[in-house]
Image (cartoon, rainbow, N blue to C red; front, side, top):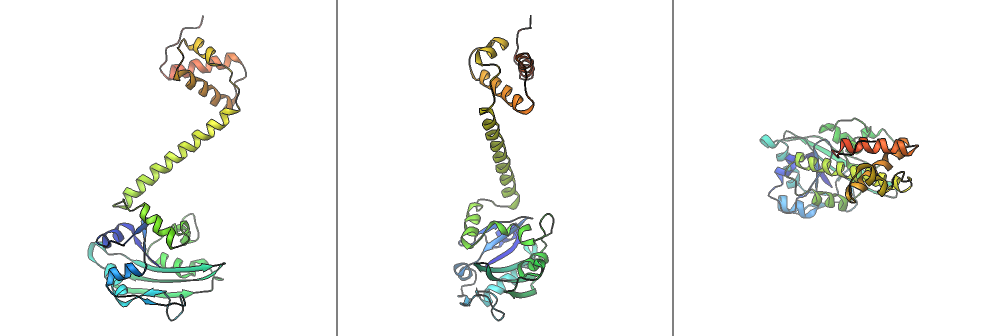
Amino acid sequence: MAVIGEFDRLKRHTAHLARALVAPLEQRMGLLVVDETLIDELTRSLPVRNRRGGSLEFPFSQTSGSFERTLLDWSHSGSHSGPLAQIEASFHGGHGYQSAAVWQAGVKTWGPAHTWDFSGPDRDWPINAALDRIGVVPSSAADLFLEAGLGRGRNHEDWMWAARFASWAASYDEWYERREAEREEAERAAAEADRYQRRRDVPVILDGRAVMEVLAIPSGRMVGAAIRHLQDVHAERGLATREEAVRELRAWAAESGIETPTPQ
């Protein structure tokens, strides 16, 4: 079971709780992982267990009146107010159920909804319907479940790990900026690895000795950089002759601030 709402609000609501873990989702949303120990810490009352799993009479596998009152309070607590969705899903072998409910402005405005039947449009499934009501906006993915980023986790343990991994972030912006920086670095590293792989099969038109002669530089890292540049150019658009390679090498040296002797 989990509670979904704006990441920053969930972090503020749970800042005083030792067992609260909030995983960042897309669209500034967060997912609060809910289990029996968190319900106990929140309410100091043991949850009511529905050992049969979700059903029409008991849509959530565990909850309590105190826990629901906590969600009501969170949904209208001043500057920290905002809609919240309580969700639960359990699947095994392609079969399972979804349950969801929505709180807003101190009122349960929708649900609880529960289904074992997923033959209808996915927008009507309980979790998607709840996400729509708390402000998740469709764009590239027609399924709001995927749009919110819920497809990144398959079970309780996945979301616990994701929340612990992001526990350092005090705000969604802080987490998002680091994620984008790490993504850019990963893309850069992948591109560099791809260039390295392509270089392995590219013939060396000018070897190290020829590069040193053309540029009048000693042996060192600059020679290796020059050869890699020639290999990249050759892989991208080809260098048919030694003369073309020399011209390309001199142009690269000029752009790199390397003074080269004037051709005789």
